[in-house]
Each structure stands twice: as C-alpha cells, then as structure tokens.
Length: 309
Ligand SMILES: [Zn+2]
Image (cartoon, rainbow, N blue to C red; front, side):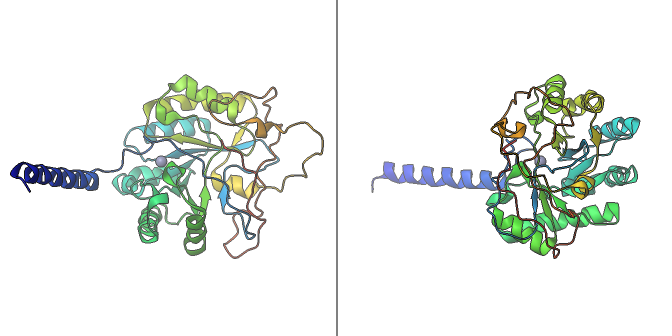
C-alpha cells in the first residue's frame, strides 16, 4: 500500500471516529424541535384501551396540555394565566427539568393542575431498548412523586414516537396509559401566537386533547386568547385524567352517507368544518370506561379508526 493511500485511510479513520464521538456527545435537540407525529393506531387486540388521542364526551370539555417544561420563567407566567381564569391544565414534564425546578412543580400541583410523564431527557423512545425506556420513565416518575406526593399514570412519548409493543409493556409493567393529542397547532415551529390560537380554536372539539409547549414564548403568549376564545365558544377545561374519567362509549355511527366531521380532517392546517360548535360531538375515538380504572379491569378494545390530527 502506498504511503499516500495509507495516509488517506488514516485520515478516513480519524474522521469516522470524530463523527462517532460527536454523535455520542451530541445531546438530543432541545425538546419540541422536531416534528411530532401521531403514532398509528394500535391493532385491535382486546383488553383495555391504553392509547388516547381524544375521548368521546357528552359535555364540551377539552384538555389543554403543556409539554417539555417546567421552564424557569414561562411556566410561572402560564400558571398566572391559568389561575386568572380558574382553568386547569396538564403538564407533561421532562424529568430533568422537574428536578431543576421543584418549586414550580409544587406550584403546578398546589394550583390544581395535573402532572404527567414526558420522559427524563426527551429522547426518541421508539428507537430505544426497553431498559433505556424504563429508566427514562422511572426517573421521571420518581421526580413527579417527589414533587406531587403521588405518581401519575399518564405518559406522553416525545415526538409521539412509540411502538405498540412498547405501549403495551409500559402499561402492563408501569401502569401508564399513553396520551397523544388530536389538536396540534405546531407551536414548536413558532408560527406566532395568533396562528397558534387560531389553529387550536378551529380544531378543538369536545373531548379534544390539545398539544402545546410551555418552553416557547409564543406558545405561552397564545394562551390567554386561546383560552378566552375557546371559553366563548362554550368549551370547558379539564385535566387529562378528568377528561378520561368523563369518557363515554360513542353511539353507533349513523348509516347515512353524511361523512362525520372528524373524518374530514387529514392534517395541518386543518380546514374548519362548517359548524364547529362544541355541541357537534366527535365520534371517532371509542371511550374507555371507566378510564381511570387500574390495569386489571376490563375495558373496550383499542380504537382502530383514530384520525391523524
Ligand atoms: Zn416534548
């Protein structure tokens, strides 16, 4: 082998080890900097429902959820906005942030909001082994218990990345139900508070689970008008656990040829249906009942027709 070629090989070797080190050391991008994808519905398998994108409710309730915090300044600001309106929300916290801001965690609980698990460091769980996933959830579980005095049974995978098999063992061994969403304003792309507000107000239906992030200033800035406009349309707010507890079994679908409103929604941005009144009930996600029952209790099968939000 010529000296020149040896040199090239050495250079290539050095380059690839640098890349490997860089990949190892590179932390995941800050939370919510990647697209969030609604995972495909679970195959029918019997047993209790363990994944929820939305629920069927008979009252115009929605759950507004905030991911990736707590944030040092934005979360307290958001809590002020919620307190001023006496509304409750659900916070899917990152464990690392939870231990950094124990006072904010305590405030979330004291003011009647719900804490839920969004992993320890926001990795792509769908690509991780079971031990790593278990550690991500358990450490966050511990952080939530330390702050709230009780553990949560709600979990949301970062980026919506999770496999059906993972969801099942996470439920079986940790008791976690997987909470996705059906209203996504894509606030992580920072489209501006007005766009975020309009998307949420347009897309929300009774039983909706709304996705937001309390780590972006524009998202928090969108909150007051979003809450006020949803309230003006007749919506009420519940935590995710409260919403799941309200879940009812939807009535049988009519045989008429009229397409149900939620089935027309295919992606973002969503065109508003002609009559977005809260009384227009959704009939897409069969409800679990009772939703808060322990893992062993029987519940209806997983939905197969959940729309992509
Ligand atoms: Zn997230």
